[in-house]
Image 1: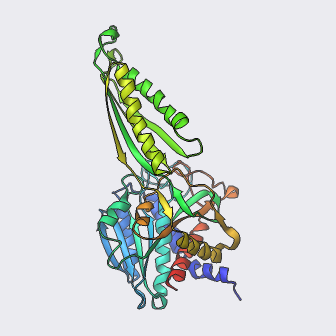
Image 2 (image 1 turned 90 degrees about the vertical axis):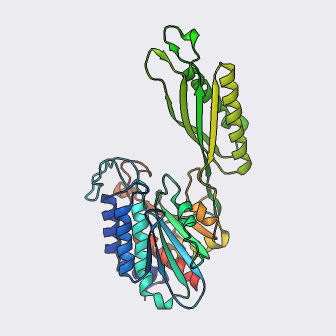
Image 3 (image 1 turned 30 degrees about the vertical axis):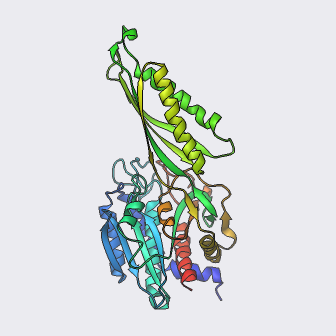
Length: 394
């Protein structure tokens, strides 16, 4: 007799070939955020073939499939992101990216394939489901917060979503494991734009101008002291200046420098303190050196906070699939994830799927040109999706 754990996986394994085929196809033809036209076509055709109600073109390229079950009014949603990254694929594999300068270096191809696999399994069980399942395929997680635009388009209604779940592949976790996190799991972010204004002069007569590049360099150095001297060292936070652009020629004093950066925090008070400090430091340094400044801080993604009862549900469902392979992640990440927007509208949980395998040489971190996953994880992730739905809908 099969065990409860193996029975859950066996239900999915008959679709293993389809799930791997879809994942490899998407991996070979990656599309950046808001450009997922081919990907959404693949997704829509699979969902329509399963008899689901399908809505295309949401927030540009988003797709939602609705599987209507029994008479219960409950609706559970599962979400996958579809976009790739502007990275050149450097690994040697038959399914390496065939698109120059674009790659699924964060596993969104796997997320999409697993969610389609879950739709295949659950469509077979339609008559046994005491509720509805929404399959959300979202564009632009990496760059423009596609989740917020999907929500604005109304995907959390008609029918109303009562709970929502998502996953992310994690090469730092071994295949066969599932990582869960109670409470705050991912940081919030703010985008920083700084402009330093000076006045131009000949490089041979610097005293006749105000060098915006020199001011900018002092601003950057001073900003580093915010984290080290103004924030509680036990409170996780980062401030990164990622770009700096200024000057037109080697012998001309630059009159303007533009910088962009990001703030990552896990606490709202810390977030506000950093924002105020950026304005104050930039103003003081610029003024002291004879220049002017502009600072714009735009809110990015919110904190991702998992609901405790929904995380309990995932823990139980994952335990049925991987047994003792369920790991409680001890610390939140300073990386952001726009699944947080969904969790502001409905209780849910965002969990991690182990996809690393040292023996197979699969260990590259996400967003690297050698990134890959152990495809044995695909059935596990799909099975946890399915079991979560079955447990929620009773």
